[in-house]
Amino acid sequence: MYGCQQNRIKPSSEVIPILEHICYTANNLTNCGIYLARQTFFNEKRIIGKYEPEEVLKGQVNFKALYSQCAQQVLRSVAESFKSYKGLRKAFFKGEISNHPKLPNYRNKGGMAVASYPKQALKLKSGQVRVPLGKTIKAWFGRSEFFVPFPSNLEWESIKELRILPRNREFYIEWVYERPEVKTTVNSTEALGVDPGLDNWLTCVSTIGESFIIDGRKVKSLNQNYNRRVSSLKEGKPQGYWDFELARITEKRNRQIRDAVNKAAKMVINYCLNKDIGIIVFGWNKGQRQGVNIGKKNNQNFVQIPTAKLKNRIQQLAKEHGIEFVETEESYTSKASFLDRDLLPTFGEKPERWQPSGQRVTRGCYQDSKGRIVNADANAAANILRKVEIQLGLVLAKVCRAALNLPQRFYLWNSKRKARSIMALGGAVC
Figure 1 (cartoon, rainbow, N blue to C red):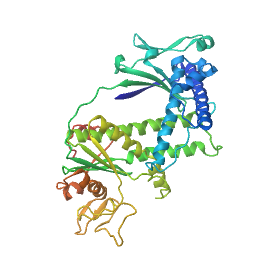
Figure 2 (cartoon, rainbow, N blue to C red):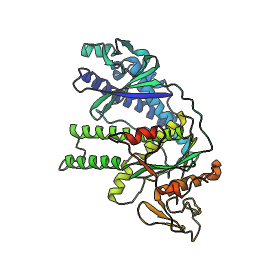
Figure 3 (tube, one colour):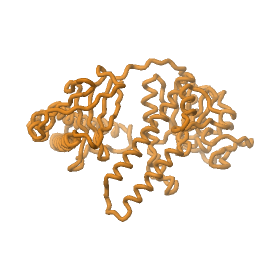
Figure 4 (cartoon, rainbow, N blue to C red):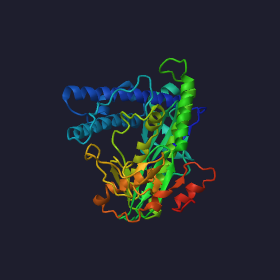
């Protein structure tokens, strides 16, 4: 398993001009590799090999302008993207994916691309990592190397690669390192149903009779504030306008959202580990963001909040910890009554005259046929478990009204950190 850690380079650093040159050159070399790969596909009807671009382009000016191993990594990433296209194309013709994939296209002219250095090219000296530049850059800049600080929380022996990431007019050094394998044992008969939303970002109900909500209102607020700020800065400006302030607030917003995704995913995984739950059932309708029409403001929040990234992060962490991740479609889970054991049809297969036994009386409350009130999103999460109850052999006897009535709410950012710290230990917050 591999992990990544990013460290920001201060704008005042003397290495910024060198990083700009490296990333500009990497962008040009990437386009050269894409041109070669596209022409090979069009003329010879084949996907280019992994080492073919560097063999053909080793005399090209952009290849020579980079350190040799860095240039090789740039071109190998191009070959890998075309290999991925080949795999997606096969999956499309087999009916495994619905959208026809497109050939990798050219990057914007004059832009910057990621540049990678394998560990073989790096050297650690007194807490600083030496990054070589090559003969061409030495002739232009009068320098053959530059140094970046090595993070104190990483081990040099585990480092595999260093990446230079240009993002929103800032530069980051990303360390790719090998992570030790995590060995855990969990109960494969217990499961956690997860219903994604907006205000309640994740509503979770477990087969052990507990439920909780990960609050999403702060994430939604951050996104709304960002959109208002962008709209204000772009007012009266031509289309495509961009400046340093827009880049700064975009980078800040992206960091906050990325932090929220990691925190929320870790909460779910920690809960499963502490409660000995071996299965996560995530309700998800593929393509649900395309053509969504739930109002202008809700559309903006629903589309821009990265719930798909959160789902993928949970899936990644679940795999690392030996927890089974199951994705199931969630049609009619919000309408059907869990307590009444309503039929849960698949989308497009609803029987004629099908009607749920209960109904939503408010945005957050669901009433069943006997007048019992439960949390609407918890009702949906429990129904997600019912979708795979027979398939996974789950026992839902402990999922009762008490579990669905008042889920505990946990916040991603809390000044006292009480909710999150107790959640990490698998405890309860009253």
